[in-house]
Image 1 (cartoon, rainbow, N blue to C red):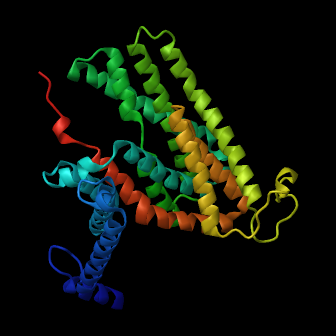
Image 2 (image 1 turned 180 degrees about the horizontal axis):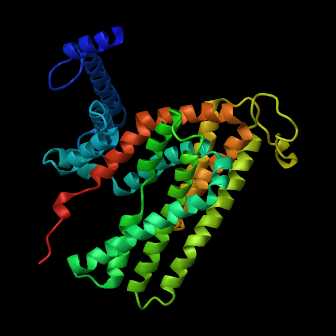
Image 3 (image 1 turned 135 degrees about the vertical axis):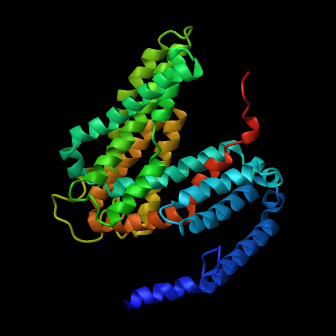
Length: 377
């Protein structure tokens, strides 16, 4: 009853429309003053790049505007923060005045690299919390969840696109797989929040969905490549080579991630005493670096994961690279143990919530340029 009375009194003290208390408004003004101070210091340090229409200024503004928008939208449950972050990026790109100063100043290549890096943070976090035993127990349901819904969605979109858009069947198939792919950056954070609250952990639901989501991405990319290869009749074997990419990415990504994760986990062993059966292999004992902190372990793991992701992007195997990052993180967590893996995951949680998530979705929103949309005849 006292808690209810306190919440009622707090609601009464909130500023209308903004739905914030005076204390929260003062804190927001203090943060805004800090943002301005950091901008002034950065402008004095690096000059024109931190001015309006400069690339560094654009990313700086997108990050903090998206952070504020995400915190504000989260006050209206069940709306997720990423909705506010997407809208913030979209506004910065398409509103006159803001578009020239911020949206158009974002370098396309840097934007792609930062989106990949931000995605790597949440993939590593998912791998650290992955229950390997549950994945093995639910391997067949995971396979059905990975392939069944995507196939059904691709077929449905293709069948609807034919009468609605009057496209050739190959174009309809490409459009179907384009819609079928899910976004791990959207699914996995929500899943991890439910897992932290204990929902579905005993049944292995988080492990099931995380595994299925990573395989789903590989399958959708491979299906898209096969259908796109059929469009280019001059490129002999284009569709067949794209078809082979799916099993190659799944097996290669999982194998590379397992070896990399085992190596990293063995080189940076847990701080507490472990039994010989759980300790590092003899091949890695000479390279052990004991006494690593959770922040250092997170830095090691994130650096290795980003290397896998960017190498996969260069080799046009992004789906396999994403799966490899999850497997590598799970393998390293198995070497470290539950306590050290949880501590490392806590560091990555802070990095994701305060930096990677708002930057990722703000850049995605800023990539949508309405002026380029045109209605065909």
